[in-house]
Image 1 (spheres, protein in one colour):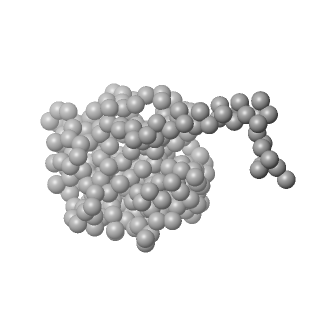
Image 2: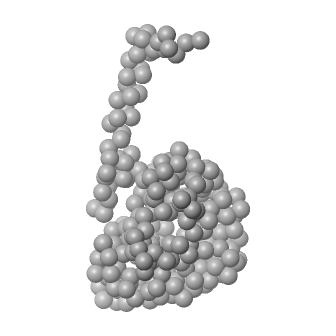
Length: 265
Ligand code: KIV
């Protein structure tokens, strides 16, 4: 299978099939996601919550993102790698945005970057794209600014918020973004945005009409149990199997049945 590129993702808007995006933050997970044939690996700043134990994504640093992006990239052959720009790594100025986006490619070996915001960050998206780095946008519930949005809740419920989100999507398209994540917005609004722009929308809690869907790896396989948003579908519950294996190891070491003859030199 050939390496997936931003133009290949853009082409899927019109010819399908729907685009699949899953997060991965390290080498073994990226290998699993890549082997499953998922199109895009997002090294999301959700890293902070599901891997590093932070209460939110605001604490995540550039250094942490680069360290994990490089590990995920080493485990990936085909999927497009998107490095998620952490809080305050792009908001300050277009220069800061280009410089940090460049580090995702040079140090993290990502193929492109994602950042949160619409009209208010369009100048950063344009600057990064002009520097030759593809950008994925992210609007709706934007976790880095959840405080300003009144918490982790569905966005775009009233008419003025819906107009604003459509303007955000159009601003990102005009600035050169190749795709946009729509997080936690009503399904009819996501459908309207999807049919109003020429770049793919990737939904998370945004209904079935988006051009693709994204979920966090740890939510899909049942490795994150602090909370489960309504939009998550758990396809597996691997935690129980992992704990069972570890308990068996402990039991066999304690009773002396491991290592057996076949494990000895
Ligand atoms: O950080 C992340 O995992 C994300 C997705 C939920 C879209 O931004």
